[in-house]
Image 1 (cartoon, rainbow, N blue to C red):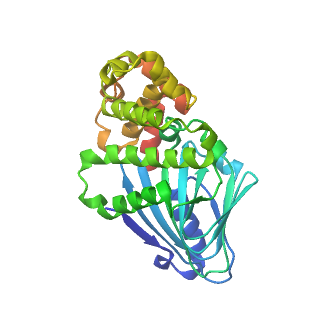
Image 2 (tube, one colour):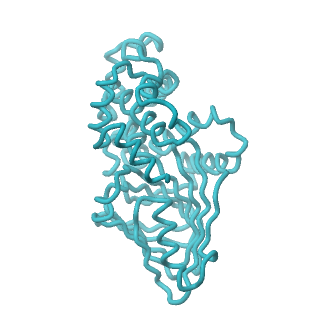
Image 3 (cartoon, rainbow, N blue to C red):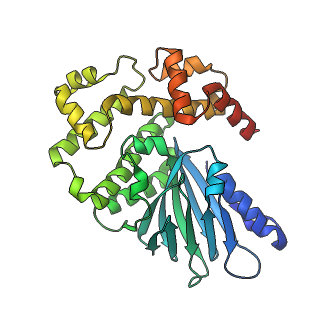
Length: 322
């Protein structure tokens, strides 16, 4: 079940500091500055689908800033898709400006500085924020930082399909079987990545048949990620395509088949290490569950990706949770 939190739970003098604490607990660290005098009002309704976190944020006009200093204090590599529901918001993402009204959305890389200003033309501003690990997104769309800060439409075409899919997931989340949620989350990330690629990189769009083939390959990878024998040869053989064609599909995304497999496996391991429900399992057991068959190889890849050992990462997450 999701959670609903509001500044009305504390006294007026404490509301702004309470709101900053709520926001920093929900998202990578930011600072909120009100644009109106008086008591500060805000609410956050949160929920999650596997590794995708949802937050519907209602607030009065304010300025939200994520500085380089805050980025240096955060170990998480996250990206956000922010949908404007009510009011207007102006984004500044390293000098790239975007203006959002209802029906628009923007993609942000939280490893880069940004600010967003909820306009004073409205007494209330409502945005829907989707937060997901950057590695999960990079596996589909390398160098996403080059696509951040652009205003996109959620009212037509694939943008509308994606938005309707998001709202249906939020509405029915409590009734979705737990074992189904990871695959639905993967589908959602695929849709978001395809939105960005088709809208912002039309010159690089792949031919329709290749796009379909790529989605089929990615779906096969997700379904067999835990299989230690998963390889480019196994994928090519199972889907009846040549290895050279398989490599060509991933060249369009500036990555390789093997890198995609290892990135996804690492992200699954990271999620399990951070999940208290898996605290009874050893690190090696988790790694082997997701297709690794050599603990030394896993340890090296994990530290290269996340900057600290798997053991240190799990210990750090346990301290945060407690």
